[in-house]
Image 1 (cartoon, each protein chain N blue to C red):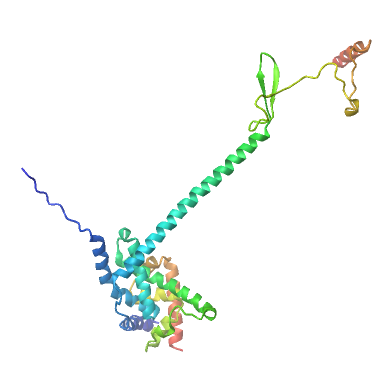
Image 2 (cartoon, rainbow over the protein chains, first blue to last red; image 1 turned 90 degrees about the vertical axis):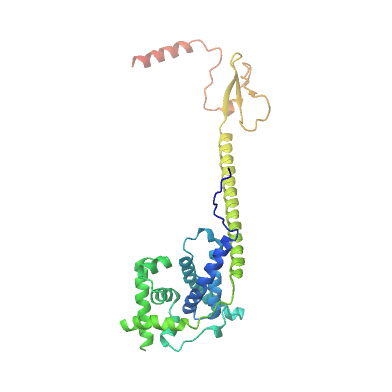
Length: 167
Length: 145
């Protein structure tokens, strides 16, 4: 007598399909986050692509792709700004800028422009807290910081914003 | 301050509307991800090879030190106890010949160069008459004291 056993069929493209689904679902939100962080469309796209590339290279080990990608964007942006600062310093020699200044979007809202003038570390904390709506604890976990560091950066960032806006 | 904290989320959300729409597809990220994975694997292999090289170098240095410390010690061994000949091995690592060097005692007729040992009083053989007696009395005097 032949036994019929229902064996779940796993698609050979399961891994790829999964990545494509996550990509489609997460890209818009991540682009907004990167754009709010950088103020540059060009840089935002680069940062998001890099975050997905990093995620793909270790896809099988990631439990929460959305959270991983958000943290990757936050950290990549900080690294990108550090690189851009170095490139600006070398700009006189190289006559080359990593990011076209024309790609930076200046907001009508002076508060947003003031956020973009914050140092990258403070800016990441302010945006994680007030754009992503993370708690101080969640911000600390996302950025790999101690809660005390988040609190002090947030406090100094808000102080600087208040000073610049009311000036 | 609270007014600022109320204004920030609204201002940032409004600014985010101008974000670019996704112009790239997942293929680019996948391609770049494969590159990153390949680079990481190469780095890991290089690190592994580096660790093996380091261990090999440490082992060679340690063995070299051990060999040189053994070379510094002169081993003396009795080659043949029945014939009571002393064999002195000058090196345990690279002996100069296959057979150990055999110690040859000086012949009784051998003369000693006095200029080499100016402070040593040589006692002639045979001992002059009276010398042995004087030595014995000196020894017994010392024992008595």
